[in-house]
Length: 218
Ligand code: G3P
Image 1 (spheres, rainbow, N blue to C red):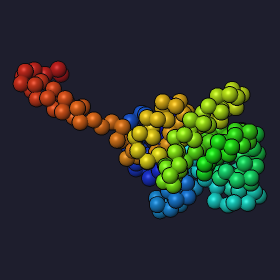
Image 2 (image 1 turned 180 degrees about the vertical axis):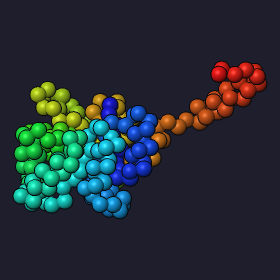
Image 3 (image 1 turned 45 degrees about the horizontal axis):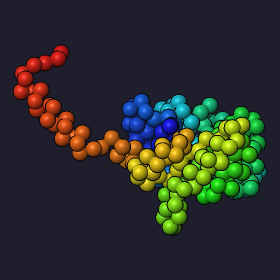
Image 4 (image 1 turned 120 degrees about the vertical axis):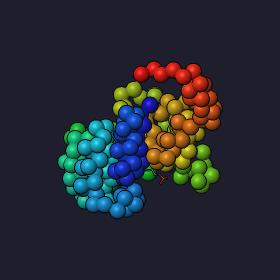
């Protein structure tokens, strides 16, 4: 399972890249607004820190402008993944860019039928939003199960299921159980995966007992 971080905060990205466990980055216009930096140079900087896929989202909604934006974003660095919305125009851009060898992440997916369209359009990634579905009373993880099962029926489709809008570690655990390819989540959710009170208590006891032995390894 690949771990992407869903942020445009370059310090947080550096911090996570340092763990050696980070496989990629996803951004969106809201995260760019939050970062408060110029989009293109920021994406370039992120691509220098992380060698895996870095999603940069188009801003337009019409085909022609989206296509131009996509080509410009793809030119920033080799690891840029152009993110497009799941609309007819977005999928047209997805097909065009994918046919030309650019990785595309299709975002704002809320149904299995949408995921089928994205796979047919050659997307490198489909991003179903589990948290936003949970927020309105649907079962986000049920959608992931459905998409993974459907994609498994068609081995020639190469689209990876990228679980997005993750709110808590349980979403990550369920994604792993289902066999989703990628998860993307805020930095604090990744950090929560490390935590367990028995780890903290156990380590404190080991440190104390080791001190009492009066020995040193180095
Ligand atoms: O980047 C797409 C997705 O992860 C957004 O998540 O928390 O805004 O629903 P959220």
